[in-house]
Amino acid sequence: MPEGTLLAPSLSPTNEFPMTVPCPQCWDLVETKVEFSAGALTYFLAILLIMFGFICFACIPCCVNVCKDAHHFCPKCHYCFGVYKRLNLSQLQEDAIGALGLK
Ligand SMILES: [Zn+2]
Image 1 (cartoon, rainbow, N blue to C red):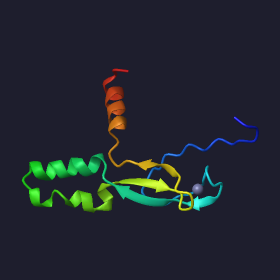
Image 2 (image 1 turned 180 degrees about the vertical axis):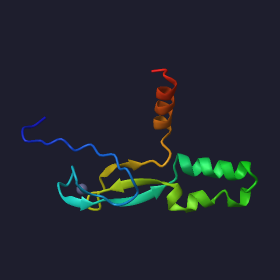
Image 3 (image 1 turned 30 degrees about the vertical axis):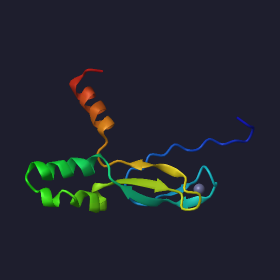
């Protein structure tokens, strides 16, 4: 690592709202640009709607941002700060293992 190089701060977004953070790539203080994409919760809700017979409404979770994961980007250099996952399956798995005392 060259002298004077600073490490990028690790950041895991905790919500879908834009945050003001220093960008580790362009070194500017920026407000993150948030883009939404389908995640685990989107598909989970769509499957639930299909299972309960609401096939016609199964596409709604794919159209509504509150059901999607939020990706935080730098508006200047498009660096990805992280993703806020509404349904984090790996975290659920860790919580279940911890609750059952299997760790
Ligand atoms: Zn940037």
